[in-house]
Length: 341
Ligand SMILES: [Zn+2]
Image 1 (cartoon, rainbow, N blue to C red):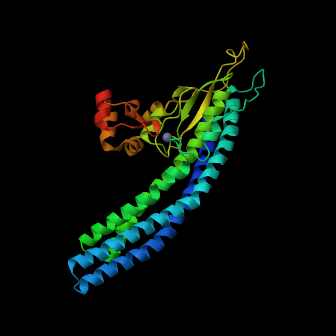
Image 2 (image 1 turned 45 degrees about the horizontal axis):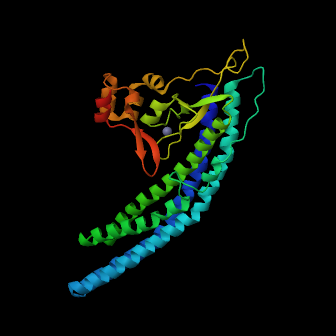
Image 3 (image 1 turned 60 degrees about the vertical axis):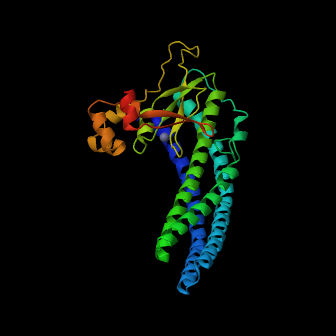
């Protein structure tokens, strides 16, 4: 690993830790919300069961059920809305920290990449772009709007699990467990949003800083944390992009861009050695790993195809395009990868 990769990885790890702290706050808020929801859910189930036990008419039971379900749904919606609103400011603050940290880190990386030479480089400050980063999500909407979608979604999914549980005559604790699983899915969405948006603010700022310094920076290079990255990001590691290219990746991606700088010769200084060592491509790195590591990253099907030379790691990178989120990348399925290989 080159010193630039180590530097980029250390910065990435700091950002990932900051994002994790915010995620933990969200998990805590969901846990507290669940305590309150669980009590009401059990009470609702008990009330419906009691009506059944009293031998009330089907119509009467249905009415009680409808009333209880509707009340519970709006309660869940309110609880989750409260939980995410409470954390919206934390996410926004973390985005603001990420913007500050990214600019400094990007400048440090430009310095490291240029290396010691005959001239001192003066960083230029990127203008404009930050305003649309802090407090906003990747679709350009205020972050709060994206988070607010979680409340109604949580209410609907808890209601659905309750309806299913009641219809199947499940034990109240089992119904509660299924509702908790449904809410868990909603919580994962919340933490994914938080992590994605914090790391995106970091990456976008780094790219903006590179762009603002085009006198020395020609583009950027994709750096994955090779030990822990997904197959798509390993394949992208070391890829060089032009300074106009965005960092199109998957949600919650922890990869980071490092600058590609002009050579001293390109900067007009003859006979000065360029010291930044080349970065090994993710594909080459992956080829050097043992079978167990390759298998754990690829899964059995893709691993067999990779080992037999039917697909290369690069064949697994698929670009995606969404009206709402713009460009992205994800791992291709084995079937699609075999078709393009
Ligand atoms: Zn990644």
